Length: 221
Image (cartoon, rainbow, N blue to C red):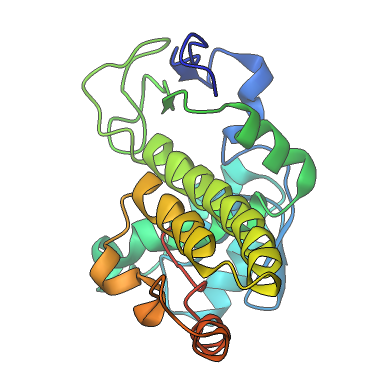
C-alpha cells in the first residue's frame, strides 16, 4: 500500500449506523454451534449461561433474541460464567461471520474501531448512543478480534501459496521472508510461532517437513 493512502480509521457505531446493523447479536443470523442451529448469536450466548440442558433448549427455541435474553436472565447461572463468557461470545461470532455475506461486511470495515453504542449496556457496549462512552465495549472488541483472525487467515493462505511456489524454485530465503512478514505484521512471537524452527538456510525436505508440522495453525482470533 502506498504511504500516501490514508486508511479509514473513523469509528463504527453499529447501533446508529444501519449499514453495520448485522454486527448486532440480535440480527437474524442462524448459526450452527455444537451441532445445533441457533436463530441468533444472542440465542446461543444466553443458552450457554446454564448447564441445564432443558433450560438451554428452551432458550434455543425462543421465538426472538429478546425472549432468549429474558430466559437467559432467569436461568440457573453456571458457576464459571464470568470466566468463560467472552470465549462463548467469540465462538458464536466466529460461527456467524463464517457466512460470506456477514464476513464481507466485517472485512470491509477495514481497521475501523467497532463500538456497540448501546446506551443501556456498559459491559458489552459503550453505554452511550452514538459515542464511545465509558463502557467496556466488549462486543466491539470481540468483533475486532474475529475480524483480525479472519484477515490473518486470508494473509496466511496467500503467503502459503507464495511459499509453495518459492519452494518449487528452492528459493527458501524469499519463502522465509514471506512467512516472517506475516509474523511481524500481526505481532506474533517469532520464537514461538516461527514455524517450527523455520530458517532461510533449510533444505527442501526440512522446509516441507516444517510446513507439514502444522506451523500454519495459528489460533489468534
